[in-house]
Image 1 (cartoon, rainbow, N blue to C red):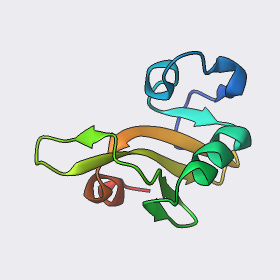
Image 2: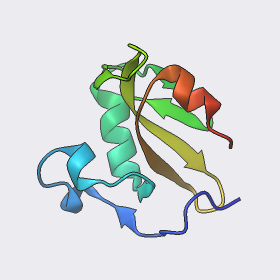
Image 3: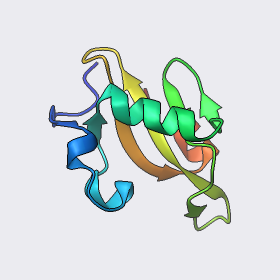
Length: 95
């Protein structure tokens, strides 16, 4: 199942300021972006399909910590940036 119609791949050359400003939600990222976030901190969540960077970004309206979050799309073999989500919000996504 293709998770996103936008097939453009965000890469390190596109990253100019802050990741969550430069990379829009529902944008695929290349492997260098994924490896950067994976290596900078132990992940908060890491499965075959879900990844959250280990440091909290902010808090949502429920007071839950939010994390830079990705889901894996096997149809295009890339991770999709899905925003700053709590662990519960990430798990609630329908994959």
